[in-house]
Length: 318
Length: 245
Ligand SMILES: Cc1cc2nc3c(=O)[nH]c(=O)nc-3n(C[C@H](O)[C@H](O)[C@H](O)COP(=O)(O)OP(=O)(O)OC[C@H]3O[C@@H](n4cnc5c(N)ncnc54)[C@H](O)[C@@H]3O)c2cc1C
Image (cartoon, rainbow over all chains, first blue to last red; front, side, top):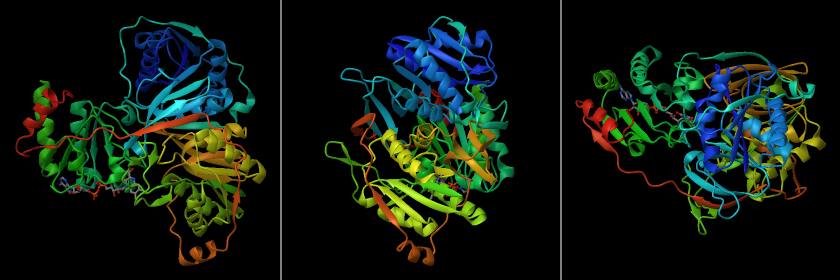
């Protein structure tokens, strides 16, 4: 089987979620070709081989910037043609979702996003996907000859045992119609661990009383190498930027460890964190609903517990 | 300006999710249905744009008769008329195809919907509609301003946002903070009853996926409580039991 993987580049490197997609594709079994757009070194691209790609196609044309969803979809359709891919894999993301949807129409493929496990091919091609914001799963048969699979974050483990992959330039006949949307600028938090991809997350809620108290959340996150998140009222009040807002209407995270500080655990917040492997809750109210969803809990004042926790982790690291 | 807002009819965010008939049917017992929260943002922004520039808002849902109260609510919030495409929404492709067919006839300047439905969470219908209509599509859109025939938007990306511009017509998947949800007032509720709600039959029944069974996640074990004076015990458990440090 020929599989094509759409990989996203961030600051010259392949994004973690895209490496997960490559390893997922290798797990299906077959010839895995990855395709990347934008500025990245040959070495950085060849690293997709370690995760399981046999070959990497690179579209270096600088027209292919973030936001050019239509152009990406057209280029991918051309790559599907060239490689004869039957299965296309990508990471579920703000770029992956819209690109996969347009591609599905172009090539007449079945599409499943939010997929959490390798397909069952014993009788057709069935994937398991997360639904109801993590509260359930659906097993879905992809009935067309071509299928597109969007992988939920952290649903696949990145392999590192492959060899470097050969990188080939891939030229696309860009059509003007695909560039009707102009990206005027981007604003990106730099040097931070991105919340949607983070393996460890420390989140704060209204219990922290104000933005001036976020220092202790940041200290704990820094000590752990974690990303920071928050509940919706916190971002609504502008204590924290919108892209940190976790939950049903915000970012959905799936880290190994989610530490919730001063967050009550409303069902809409839980909907964004219920795919976490382990949840630690720190709340002064023993009745806080979050304790029901937690693996470990501490009833206590965040202002006392969090600095102590940071110190204890520092002690462990030394 | 002619705006089409596509809305989903979904279980309230606090609903208990369960399945019946050998895990093949969603259990509707005691479930309240609402306008999809992201669609609510799309509708609210449409109402604001209509207030600014005039025009009309049509709301559309692909669903069976039971979704009409949700459409009436959208009319009460400020839509002028509603279309219900009388079919069970089989999959994203099926829904997108129905929307695209209806949109072709309406000749809309702007097609707005939520970034994703909260039942199937695919986040792909808007972009499928865009492709089917050969129109640009963008999602998730956080702000939208219209200047003449140009739309200025910001789109959420991982760890930040992107500023974009494009000419109408466009298909957009919306999310907060694009607008504040609007709550229907008494006048809205009264006039909603008299606004047209047109039921049309689906054009075909093509789907590209087939749902076989539902599954619930494994039950969560009980929480381990740790004394606030003993945080090193927590660190120990995270390192040696959970193995996440
Ligand atoms: C349709 C819809 C969608 C929504 N989407 C989201 C979403 O995506 N994400 C989201 O987060 N919310 C969402 N909400 C809001 C959600 O219902 C809750 O209102 C919100 O999660 C509450 O945030 P919080 O826990 O920070 O604040 P609160 O509910 O005010 O809780 C604060 C908590 O802090 C604790 N506390 C106070 N002081 C201390 C202290 N010193 N030390 C320790 N603990 C302390 C309190 O005991 C309390 O449990 C949504 C709501 C709706 C209706």
